[in-house]
Image 1: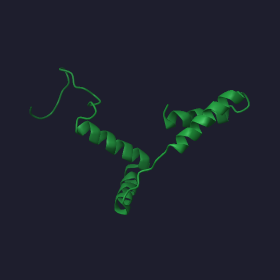
Image 2: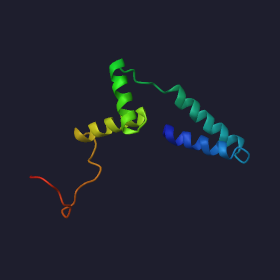
Image 3: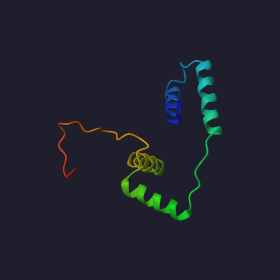
Length: 97
């Protein structure tokens, strides 16, 4: 279960606080506590933090979203992840092979 999933569950529970069972709420809160306990941040150099902050603002993204995008793109570019959209034989492409 991801942090985003747990966050969504907690938000939904807060919207329905009158009808959610105590046991379900207890499970969600324990999961959230466990996730918070196990979170480790990445400490970046000040000049890297500043560059990421400026780029995130320029692109209209949060810094976390920008970092996720950079990491995903790097993993794809270096063949650690598959290319998200495979080309089929009918796809038009520009350039030379």
